[in-house]
Length: 343
Image: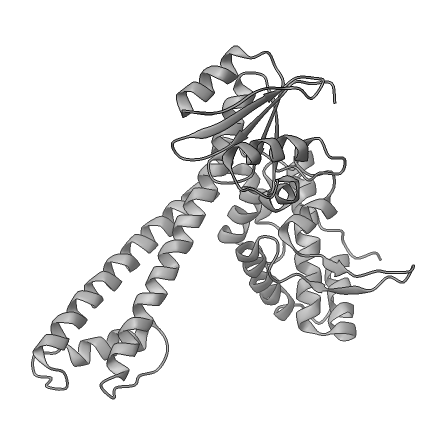
């Protein structure tokens, strides 16, 4: 509470910057260019730099830390209640300052460049995956409009396109064939780029020692290890494994009143949905390959859990435990050593 605060409302070309003294007196609140903000941070004694956890905040967080400042980045949804009724950049900067002073405020961790590098490869891979799927669906819809239906999957799509684009085929008019040819070329190009980025991601994972340790966990492969490392980093941004699991969205929601505690299911819209889905698929694979006779304590726990609550709930519980264990491995730099079954 006794520190000078610089609050930044981040944007692409103009950043609203406000500076507050220790006595909560606003010295200025004005728009600045990115270069001017860098000069402001460089010429200001170490203080608190507050901002929303939006686009480019990892970059600006690293810039502020490089000049010795303490960064407090907050989720935009947490900042919104402290912004006035008028939505302006100046009010946003004031609201960011007020929010960073609140007790119990949730702060975002600043990703180092290596961690953000893996995250960038992952998000680009997911974008290409969505593009590939949407293009394939569009080709299927185009053919359906002319009465042609084929099975799901890439193999069936390739066979159908090869059949209708064959020179001897008269099922489609020349104009529609030209459109289908263009769409198919785009599909093949996207598929090629998707494979390239997937290989690039796998290479980063194979060269990363933390990711190699994470891959020792049950149901965690290259994609899951990359997602865990991109989300958790070295684990220092979370107080415990439970906090890390809450961040991913693998813990049940709570609805309590009058001393009565009611635990609901996980929040399907919150957390890291892509990572949670990847870990769930890996957990399902691990659960489906459980041996008849358990060899470790975790296998015995999983077998008993499947019998008690079913496969899907057991998979969610395994995802929760995987995230907590991953946090411990990253935070304390330890290898994964599953406990053997007691004799």
